[in-house]
Amino acid sequence: MEIIVAEQEGMVSLLIAGRLDGTSSGEFEKAVLPLASSGKALVLDCKGLLYISSAGIRSILMTARKVKASGASFSVRGLSGPVRETFLQSGFGSLITLEG
Image (spheres, helix red, strand yellow):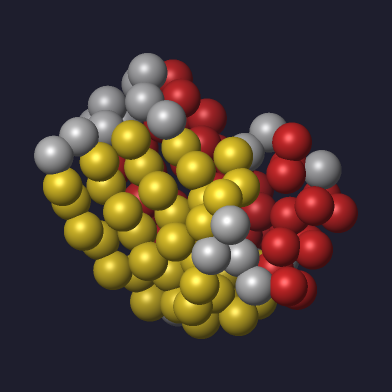
């Protein structure tokens, strides 16, 4: 998994590529959770995400909760067909803002 962080005024954008699963979710949390407390809006761009497991979904949900607790907005964009389907089947699609 690869994570590219781009910070702009009032917003943090994260581009994720590869697989977000039980093996890589710890790496994701280590990189992302500190940013989630910044009070800046966080956008997770998943256009390069090939696969996500329930562990990956859980990590994203933890991140979303932390961002929202800081008073900022959180959204996920660029979901491919299979990854989008995993989000929707998990029921988290109603808890997390999914953009295009």
